[in-house]
Amino acid sequence: MQSYQIVDWGKPLEPRDYPTPEPKGSEILLRVTACGVCHSDLHIHQGYFDLGDGKRLNISDRGMQLPFTLGHEVAGEVVAMGPDATGVAIGDSRVVYPWIGCGQCGDCARGDNLLCTKPRVIGTWVDGGYSTHVIVPDGRYLVDHGDVPVEVACTYACSGITAYSAITRTDITRSDQSLLLVGAGGVGMNGLLMAKAVLGCRVAVADVDPAKREAAMATGLCDAAFDNGDDGAATAVREWSHGGVDASIDFVGRPVTTEFAMACSRGKGATVVVVGLYGDRMGLSTAMLPLRMMALKGSYVGTLDDLHAVMALARDGKLPPIRVTGCPLHGVNGALESLVGGEVTGRVVLQP
Ligand SMILES: [Zn+2]
Ligand SMILES: [Zn+2]
Image (cartoon, rainbow, N blue to C red; front, side):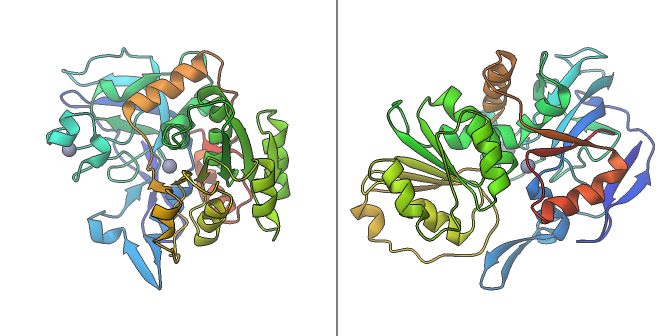
């Protein structure tokens, strides 16, 4: 098999050839047919997350060994199965649920694998899908995508469930409520496509890029779009929502975008969900949280149940497909660069 690997933090990925692995026990070997290029791959590639004030969360400190193969939005065809593997057959096309825990602790036993302190996440802890082949530890982590095209279905494993999980944390229960999505990149667009289907409420998008605002409006699912780089944007959002949005999701995660989301919120009882990992730190009037009864939450990816729920929406035709740009495996460095430059609308998907 050939894998494009991080050999040095921040340096271009390099192709490496290895013997194709043989699945053991309950493991399953997939031939990778599609792998989304996610913004969080950039952080891992650089080797750190920015915590602000010059502080960094170094990925190498948590024990990741180089060379390493990124790629956690993986779909593929089952080509070999370990002697104890179940749930699929050779030739099946499946999307991989990558957010796998140790499988032994109490959190994993309860299905709260995202809370596991010993994760085995495919593409962030163990080798992922920037490769011709990938090993999955168990058949239960493979999800049937039905007629949904594989290059769209693979993006649900991260950007899809991240958007879905954030949407289900907004506390929105009524169709007359309003939701603001800040940032209409890959995950934000998935959020927009799901918000109507899942919540059925009024939805607005804010993005500094006119092309992204246009793409959001072109879906027909967006009731209004705002330029959050504009000084009057928060006032305009409050007017649109008759006094402030009930909930917002910050898909960027910069201080300026979270502050914008809070400024657009209704006076009392709003929920702000932060999803983006852009980083840095912000000042916060702590007294305003109780006085405004505001909930400020973080949401990180999603559960296996979330992936099943998203795939069911997509299979039922309730989820319009996200815009996908295909890219050969050897084009991965260019794909990463275009993400750094913010040039991507929708998702770049590698097709090994
Ligand atoms: Zn991701
Ligand atoms: Zn665990």
